[in-house]
Image (cartoon, rainbow, N blue to C red; front, side):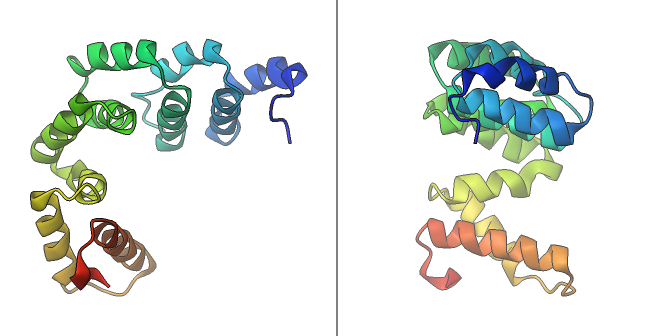
Length: 169
């Protein structure tokens, strides 16, 4: 309900500084949705945050704002980033249609086993042979039918369907 309501910007910026991700994450998204480019520095600063919700909001905001300045900054930061931050930078660049993003995602896929599946969800949709095979093998594994397992299997199936895999249906 605050879309393009510029009088709310100062209040939302106050929320952005809150330590609770339940408050600061939606504030990041709102400011990005409103096109407030002043939030970019804050989004850069939380890309490496250990709080996934806050970092995911930063990724979303940077993608939504886009632009050559963000692409340039992400490419510079990619050289020194590691782990989750590297993955998040790669997601931003990939979503902004930069070839460097795909290369970085492939790098994260091979170097960080804990992020392999998350990267595979993205690259498989782009018909990446290795990640499609990885997801197919994960889908064929026997697993307990817990809620988290069923969610994971649904994500795998969704990525394979998006890639055009006829067997995923």
